[in-house]
Length: 450
Ligand code: FCB
Image (cartoon, rainbow, N blue to C red; front, side, top):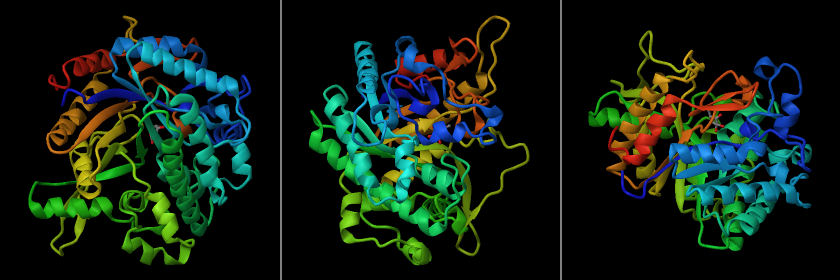
């Protein structure tokens, strides 16, 4: 890795902050959704979560102990703007301000994600992403963030995984706000969310107090080739940007969410296939959506192996019995951190970050009082070796491990642990896992020990 490669870890507001009802914070869609019975494993919710709102200083010291160069966190929209727009909650501004100062005092570079799924409930009641004003709502958050934080923060991401907050939130309905909308509506929401991204970029630039590095953080399941034969590589490349066969699954793809942002157009194949569902898309919309960004990012956890079939079409390679999986059932496919960034860079030609990658393990505190997580070390070592290969070929800026600490894993509640830091939710005691110590060495040697 180059000298200025950024080694970080990531979290998001709802998953760690808690203090859901304190100091003037408004409700967001996850506050409402988790309080309804039946949605979340064990009836869990983010009311307290890791109590990071009160313990952020301790958490920053732990980041320092791990030696992180950078920390990616999201702001809780309803903590800053309880109604989503309009009146500012000064206590919320103060919280993030103090967090930023603490990070800087400890030599850790802050990376802010504006929207990581927790839309204020007040805005959801006004139609959420269906409302044509929604791009202006995100612009209001971007303005506040730029005005109040960009004197000290130079790195911003607009949206985290729009695939999920639209696809899981409004299509399959397994995430907040838990709706199953007609396909037509979800395409309109997606279009509005992309416009919101564009408005956020414009607004951050306009009000930024220093030159900002602005990016976008969608997600993908990357395709990787079965062999390095050119046909298989081509098959994987095509599969990587293809649209899902089933329209009900449309949100799970790369090109619909990234081509407009980086190439200024929706993919032709989609415009034809989805024609019956599409809202009006104007040239002005596409210009807004493709407002230039500085860096591009993806959250990549796993993917699928592809080969070129004898009919000249990409085909999925079946996973063998006993294929390695994480505790939440995700396949372990380290190749995605080589091929994913490489294919994305070829197509979009932007400096690139991995904004999330990591694994869930059912970690426990051992008799010796420590948390031994050899699986996570093995997982990260395998994935980072692949990323290192990619770094030799493309402009790769950094890697954010998901997650700094165990936290509220959405539908799975607290049952899945992704952290470098173990959290005992009964006492809020934190314990650095073995993987945190291992990651420290990776950071110190700039990946040379991988
Ligand atoms: C990603 C989310 C993040 C976390 C990880 C495990 O999809 O962005 O909040 O839940 O998955």
